[in-house]
Amino acid sequence: NTGTTAATGDYIYYLDSDDEFTEDCIEKLMAVALNDHEIEIVQGNGRMEYWNHGFTKLRNLVARNPYTKQFPKNHVTSNEEVRACYYQKKLIPGTAWNKLIKRSFLTDHHLLFKEGIIYEDHLWFFFTLKYLRTVSFVSDITYVYKRRPGSITTGADKKTVTRHRCIIYKAIITHLTPGHEMEEYQYYGRFYATFYRRYAYCMPAFRETFPLYWQQAWQNACVP
Image (tube, rainbow, N blue to C red; front, top):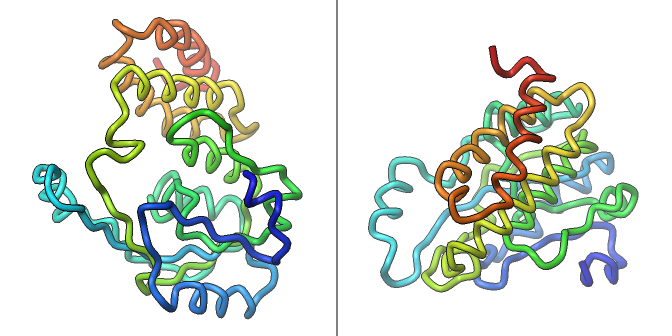
């Protein structure tokens, strides 16, 4: 948030402190942005790497389901298309990093990160999708995402993870986008249900949030 507020350039690029981008990352993303000034986000491609040890099971999983994307489109120009790329086709990662973002798009829609939580990217991108209309894709690898033991997301204790997840899911269910309630409920409801089954017994906040999800399910005909 501090960097976003202080930035004066036309575009912003977020980089997690333990990851890295390729030498030509900004050059490749900017070449697309400069070709069409209406583009709000240029989405780069990436690969996942593991630091040292501790992720044998995850490494096997990623070998079957790699982070690297195959983009069937080069450009989308409507909010409906952008939503389809995220909610249905899983083409756009719900993270802040590896995206070249038009700064005026962020400032016009007041898209800052909720402070004091982990996984803040997920909540930020939920709100970003409400306004996003033009996205271009770069198939070249521009980012290296590094999974390592002891990072903020892998090293957090269960109680912290659960508490922050609950904050995110409560914010989402109380800010569904008019006309897209079912789409958003079905997407995020699956994640909420998974965490509810695992942690509701030890985290009262999850049980308090449950009626909100049940209400939305009935209102949007997501249950019989």
